[in-house]
Length: 403
Image: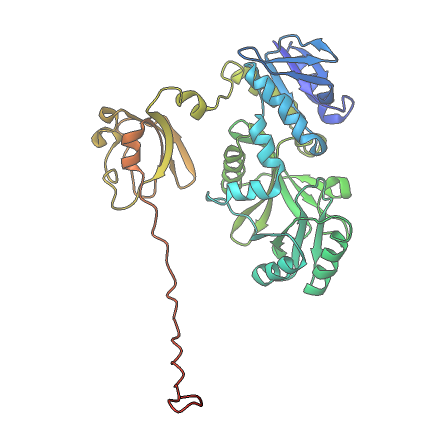
């Protein structure tokens, strides 16, 4: 098997370890500079060139896309996907995880805890956001890694000064997040490979520093996280579409709170803290999944006219609630249940005797006309009653001059 590692830093720890793991498994591996690719788009035959020459065939790709080159890097990964090459992390998942606002928006429709977050565009919006989240609060730039662009504002006056500094040159869009006092100066990094957490560490800040990033002098220790934290980390990575991810979580008063889902997590800190061979686990994942590359199921299945994929909740008054899949007769109506999501747990390819409950979410493929009849109608929007004030007509004096 031939594996390509997309990286601009062939000598950095993470790239070296991944390369060593590929060699140890007996695979041919090359580290390719992401910015040296040329993308050739033509009908029926997508191609890539590297340093001006036609790229040889590869079986799998491990993307290590830096934040500064997300756009071009994901374009290269996307071209590999069009060529039928297995990519550990797909291009769309890298794009979503790299955008802090977009990733929070994606997580928000699922049962994943995260700090209350408000998107703000200017100083006035930040002041309004502080009313929602309170102080102290965290102000984050939309793009930033290793703790850069993350500021703790202890009060409104400090937040105002921060925004004035950020907007003095270029206008900066920011996220304002509630500060989790219970987890001040520490967080948990869980490494997800495939569908399980293979290693976890607690990162702790030094001194008065509230950011626990290792690059800012933070210390790390190996920990065993409980089932709730494991479920949260795996679910967050799956929502993003990532097969290899670092999930950063705070230890909130009511359980885990996701801070970020990283599509190119560093290996050095967690391998040294835990002793787990993360690189070997990634290569093993490739061996298991290279024959099953990710596809855009909506794109493929929409080729058949009148058929499609949709996901919808089962309401208490639904005809499906309380019945097994077989009893619903969905298969007879040309609808296949691909998966059931129940309390944040996904049940793939459910058996026909699986009972459906109110609150379940079904992912189905089938006739669009049937699916439309199963999707609950949207909730009616509440309209505010507007009181109209009728001004009394001004009395007209019949004895005005001129009459």
